[in-house]
Length: 206
Image (cartoon, rainbow, N blue to C red; front, side, top):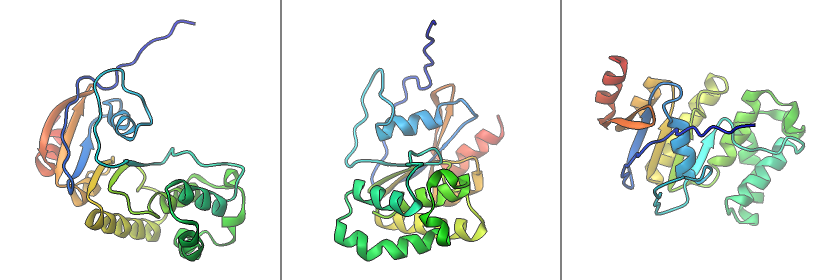
């Protein structure tokens, strides 16, 4: 079968400084998720280079979890993979499990979970170790109101402690509350880069 190459990102050049919180906006297919995946090193680039001061952590609804393993085992494995010392993991495991609000379901295999339940496990794992560079791709719009409020508070903590946030979200309200800078992508190119309120205004006017 013939292969087609989709050039999702074309000549994007941006500098993001430590302490910045950046919202990436654009229509479906504009290259938002591809950009985050490339920054995280999940997708290789065909041209150019991505320079980072620290390993970026990508938090997305589609992040890889082990379906056959229980929720608690996924949390354990994820935290160890992020470099959390074993002694710290044992000390904090109950707190991380409690955060998910999954009760006894935490011991069931992940492939029996709903997408919202999986997202809770993924969120807790991704934010257990405060990252210096956090990339969020639509991962906050899951769970019930209480869980969303807790996850927002945790993200705010990470921004205060860590430094750099780059976020893709269909909720313009969430982008404007978390981010100070906006980047508008259109057809894989940067159409605008400026204060988040200006970029949202331009996007709404499209």
